[in-house]
Image (cartoon, rainbow, N blue to C red; front, side, top):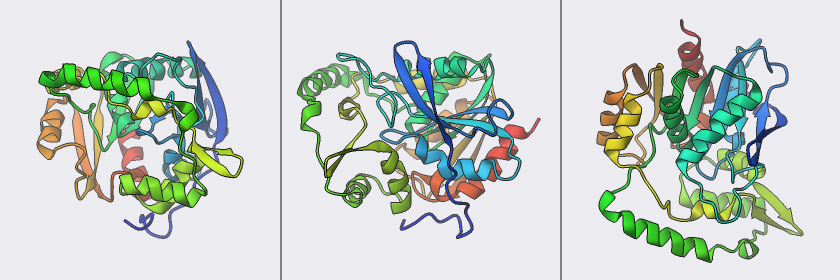
Length: 302
């Protein structure tokens, strides 16, 4: 994909206000439209792995065009963007992210709210909807329904690899980049995404060091996940979700989750709908206007 392709009429990324949420033990950064704070339908947006809240800027501009209906808060997950990092010696477990989302809703004063998650954010949002069915009213996930599964036969191997990699993490030896363009190229070499989308995320996810640039994200995010759920566990989590769910997939399908697994997971939902939009894994940035129409219809329908 060579560019943002939801026609040439997509609105420019909106300039949301930077806010800070104080959670137990960590500080979360987030973006929020001050004009909609406390006035719209509460919607917590959760980005993907190594992304940040900026990945929702194109979508936020479309969702709240005109009067808008949503009090959208896009957070930076711990270790990402402008949020704090876990304390030394701690992991980035999925189940801890669930607590972060619920604490974030508490900090916003939201007893009930909707969730929107992309990729890793979709996995965390899925688990959150299962963990707090009385609080999550509706759930939309983009390019993911639940986390990646792990082979139980390789649990010991995975844990040992994670410990070895953790011991080698040295924040003082982070790679330095000569330009933002170089960072965009490095990111796109690992994941197919439009240059404009990559730049939007990277500009929020970098920090300057003299004449060079470094990633803000915690390098521990790159090590092997020491613990993964089995596919059977994930299906049971999904079956525990009681709210309506919208699943949004890219067309053509991306290889991050096998089509057969996705169909099994979707079938486990009690109240789900699935749609596809042309694009890559970051389809919510490429097709912001089209997706905003789908999301508005989903969240606002009785």
